[in-house]
Length: 460
Image (tube, rainbow, N blue to C red):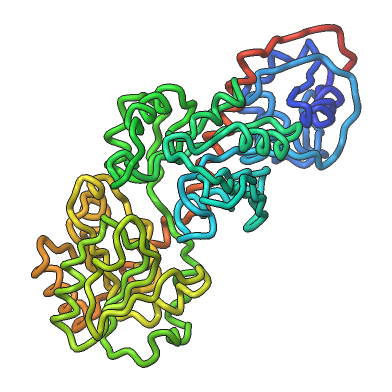
């Protein structure tokens, strides 16, 4: 056989089009794994006849093995062309269209962490549920690398949050980009219908149908979404177990943490909002809704000379029902950037969730954030918390036990290094990279359905 190197120049110039070009007489080499592993590391001067001299030979061979799309091509070599096999590369011709039940500028949690990272590789268009307004319009916000569509409607419908006007706005923003539909709520299935044939990803972060005020028909719509989705990511063990029957497309990606951001808490100044509060300070960060066990807050405030601090917005419950005490402070929603300083001010971090149907499947993101900040953590016996963190989180079985565990944690402190070690290996960056790899395989598999091998004469 002739020397292979002139032939393997061609792929680099056409990888950008999703095609790997080889000559007819070297197609038999493409599945030879040993060549891919050994040849690419050899200096040019020491290669034998028949070994490639392409600068990025490993890239070329990986592309051949990964795409299964071959066409004879003469063409020239473009040094430094980007590998089609690089994780995230195939996303760059796509836009992710997201259906989100939360406010992007609300509490920063799983969707914001994931989507802001994906936005580094492709366009991300987030469609929120409508807000009440005096006139109908679709507000377009650009923040954190994503584009947010916030519909304002004189009449809002929780069971049909996406309407024709919103679909038109999204389609205009999408332009010529290929869509990937990514849903956090089953109630936005109209986005799927707007882009038929687009890959569909369901990132299941909560069992929303079990929440208070869930729209009618949500459980049935989720079953439809699970059936139609190309990929299903689940945010915790319980969520995964309940949806695993839908097959190998269901993946467990439990919540992660921005470790560098939260681990700097110990070097932050104490937050001014709690500067005059008596210590110890028992703190909770998150939404205050029907999932919070309010008697725990009342009992803890009554049992300590210190302070119970609650940071976050109130939702789906009447604020008048919140327990009140001189040492129970509600600080409301605070900017994400303030969280390290707030956690620096806490002595004990709380997860006072009620044991109800709505908390049966939750996997709280705040667990790892607390641990990364070096805080002792006390939680009720939420199944995912017990399964994942029993060795680093104090688990309480009742209201009196929660109070006792919190007071003991304030007294002894615990070992922050153990909790930090637990958090450090669960980064959002690593989770999103694995998600991108799954999406890349999904897109390449879709391409392979249309692949044909065209062999014509080529010149080596």
